[in-house]
Length: 498
Image (cartoon, rainbow, N blue to C red; front, side, top):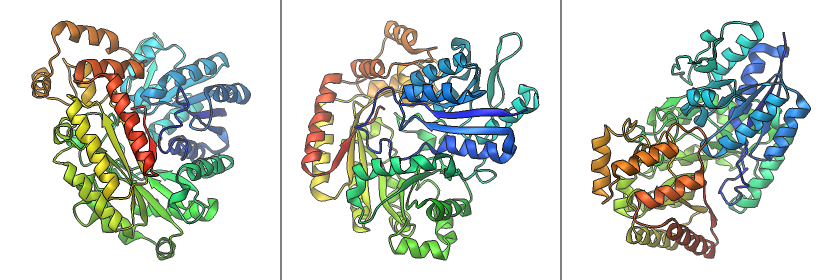
């Protein structure tokens, strides 16, 4: 038996061109799955990859019709899930089976299979490579689906089954994605990147993402807005990171590597091991500025363990930091774990001194936000713009997403995942001078609980009304004010959907 497989990253419902980093990097996850499947099954599987980051939903739907796949795998986040469903329906009409993966399907595998007849399967694992290869193998060999880890499906009686989801260590298997699957599209990402950030470099840049490590040092008490599926530290072999860098630089001309580790300072041992494992020929390229690295990091982590110097030694030229607020009350409300406005400023000063530029992101409308706390955050942004150099500033609305502490506050009050219990939520909200009565609790659960398809705009509006002391309109006005302020300093602006 052979199989035609189309792997898709679902597009955003609108062109989110105002977001920093928009369409600058390929969705490397689907490329990794394509690589792993081909390595496992060779000519038994014909694979094509389509990234909705640079394609509209209509383009992806046409690719489904043209390719006529047997199986369509769709990667979806909460904001892109609606488009994923549209693609799934097109795939079903074309006679294909459909499997969903990534964060949002992983949050709601059972609910999706109960509600969406166009979806046949869900992979519910943050590290989906192993279960996906197992799944494709079961289809090829006609083996029972009950043996496929992390798989959600309907049994012969139509009942939904979700198999156990083990934890997979990246050290054991973390396939290096083969960029041949997207070679024709690499110039598109490069041009998008240059249009936004080319001024930060003195040479032509071709970017790519690398994901050799996952997790965050704040994972035990995640930030209020954080909806990442699994924040446990999970690192691959340092040699795997450098092998990817070497291969991509040599074979594809890639010279900017964005390691999308949730927080690069989460594992000091891993960072030290990366430095020790740097091949001499890559060290020379880094020292000459021919290879650059980008990372995510927490401000508090950057101020410790000589981490800024370690970043410099690894070729890091830009760091993305979630500063979130400059008001101490809002930093506490967002569970920033001892991070202060002074910590944020200190981290950026240290990075600037090391010649590393900074992408800073802030949030308007955190739990309990008041006009005066938002004023203090904007004053902090103004101070930062006057004292340090920033490559870009992103100021976004707070949007509560599934699998976040904010979702506990909004929806999962009776069965929270990140608070101890309902009383813990009540105490947290009381400290912010907020209260949510039983009738409103019932209404919120009726609107958002047991729903697999969520309206991001509705979530933002309801959140502002009931979990802050400002209006959504006020938050949007202040965000626009900051955009003008940042632009006046010749710094790139942007905002996210979440």
